Image 1 (cartoon, rainbow, N blue to C red):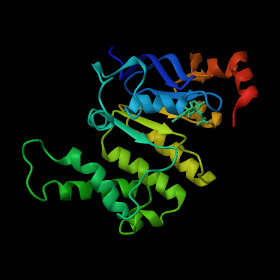
Image 2 (cartoon, protein in one colour):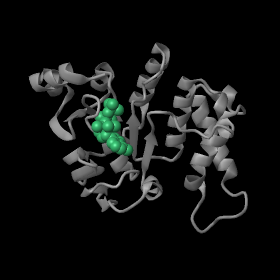
Image 3 (cartoon, rainbow, N blue to C red):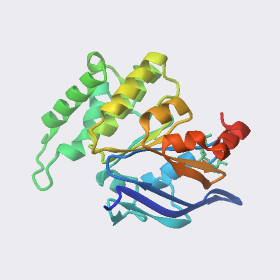
Length: 247
Ligand code: ATP
């Protein structure tokens, strides 16, 4: 079956540093795949390449069988990539609800049937549903800039879902969350529709093992190991890499 995401031979250089050096990655439809590795291993750089935010020096990327190597982030978002950043990216001066509506609009407008104001009520309905799901309904009218970190994280996930992604890229989603918020995040990720693939970068291995079907371990820009959580947990090589340098 055609993979949801396929990346081959990805190489990214910053001066003489190879942030990624010939990395391959495959995520199947509905699969939950984690990228782990010590600090500076290249995890965020690989998410950037998949999202189209960083252009690789070499290598190619396909999304559901269509090559997107030369496509930018907006085109890839239209083709089904949603992203959560290390630091939540929301529009601070818009309200919480408006943030989700803006994210939903391109997806509720029907091509060729645009009219002024069209799609607004559908976007509002999407926002209402998602905000209720994240316990943010009461804050819908507040400026997003007033939210606490954990709430911003939830809002960013709601915004990504408003884009109806086929592949959700999550960069350290648990960072800065309280234990309660992490619990809610885990529940939420488990409840995602099975059709949505996930590529998760996370330092907390308990979360990685709880949430993922498959794991790739990067180190110094190369693939150190790939396999199921049980295989990765049992790998002496991976344990050594972590002992030598994870945050
Ligand atoms: P962490 O777990 O600390 O977030 P990571 O595995 O996500 O690390 P990356 O952020 O992808 O690692 O960085 C990989 C390497 O590339 C690091 O050595 C980093 O310093 C370097 N790097 C990343 N972005 C840039 C940049 N814009 N300019 C120069 N070097 C960069």
